[in-house]
Amino acid sequence: MRTDSSPGTLPAREHLPAGNAGTPVLDVVIPVYNEEKDLGPCVLRLHDHLKRTFPYAYRITIADNASTDTTPQVAKRLEAEIAEVKSFRLEQKGRGRALRTVWSASDAPILAYMDVDLSTDLNALLPLVAPLISGHSDLAIGSRLARSSRVVRGAKREFISRSYNLILRGSLQARFSDAQCGFKAIRRDVAQVLLPMVEDTGWFFDTEMLVLAERAGLRIHEVPVDWVDDPNSTVHIVKTATEDLKGVWRVGKALATGSLPLDRVARPFGDDPRDRDIQDVPKGLARQLVGFCVVGGLSTLFYLVLYSLFREFSGSQIANALALLVSAVANTAANRRLTFGVRGRGGAVRHQAQGLVVFGIGLALTSGSLAALNAASSDPSHSTELAVLIAANLAATVLRFLLFRAWVFPDRDGTGEPESTVVAQHHPSSPTYPTGGYQPHQPHGPLPQRPAHPPYAQSGTTTTQFRAGEAADGTWRDSTMRLQPVRPHDTEPGDPR
Image 1 (cartoon, one colour):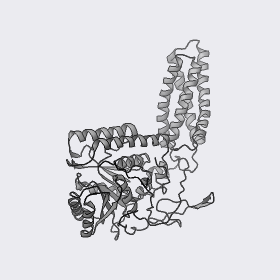
Image 2 (cartoon, helix red, strand yellow):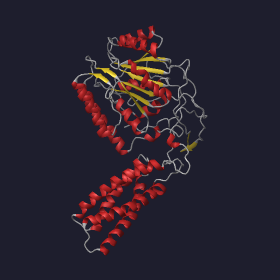
Image 3 (cartoon, one colour):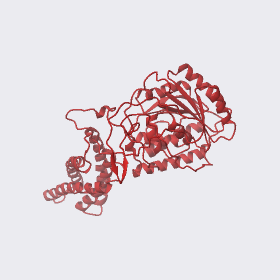
Image 4 (cartoon, one colour):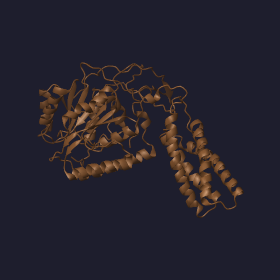
């Protein structure tokens, strides 16, 4: 899993200005591989639809990834005949690689893609990108599994699609309904920060991007679509499914170990109503209370199960100590990740050590309660022991939350979240495609002014703290950054198509 630095936190969502001449608002990418027959009708139909219905300037980009037929010639002919069409060729296969390359270098503020077969009805395109233009959402996807979607396809593909999405929900806790529908859009500023974290270059690219975006707290808008299955699709279903399952395992492992710096994708304050200044309520307290209560409830059940197991072969005091120790370690790890939003391995040992101190206080409370019960009754029943322990744990839980918030995971920046600083090296260079003849247009204009951040030195290297789109002098300009290939020399001969 890639962990290389991203450009920084995202700017607040803003409605794109109307009538911004010179730069397309929407760039629709069509990734193709050996599609000489379908490419021409697809582009002509899409162009006609956009010309008649889309109220903003647009561009259609054909991303040919290593076709071996006449697809490149067809793409060049369409580019010569239609002003809004651009073509770009990669010498390596992979739909994810094609999308990453074109999206990373595009100057359009809204980036979309659709499959060349146009299985999705084009009337869903404007509803797809409208929430991104308005600043309401960060990503948008077409869903074939929404209740109001109208889908025509065979039982085999229906079963595979629903099974795959059930796997995503069960293994990665995904809440979006359709990961693989070839009809998606993303804001460019989001793509610039999110794409460097996506490793896959094939068909799992969509799923990985959506899972990371969702885990980072970005807003994903779903649009029900009308979709007709293409009976002539050349996708190798079994091989693609196998590669997707490998990707699920890889992403799940990275999320479980905290190796992904998802905090770098978080938006700054200013576009979330939960971050507004509310008198007499510490920021983040309500969310932390809810998270702590959920974790605490699950930890209590876990503790009671462990206590009952340990009680079968030991006394009450030993069983209580062992159950509380195991559950305390799990409780600290869960609260660190879920309640207080601390990711990665940095400080994990210190947090567990402090958590054990808190555990000691809880042990004193619960052990003291058991000692008082045994003093009052020589042979208390098991149910009485459990009732006393629950009461003692409730008191220990309140104290545990206060100690976690004020000592173990303190709020150092006044925002209700643990302090997190992202520093990235600034390389002021114009984005270009690594190969091919398509050169992006000039940026659509500067982003809103933001206060400059002071530079600081580290190990003799001068770096500057900045967010996506922020230049070294503090002004906000085009924030597209040059991306390096994941594996510059790979060929992926087995990429399914």
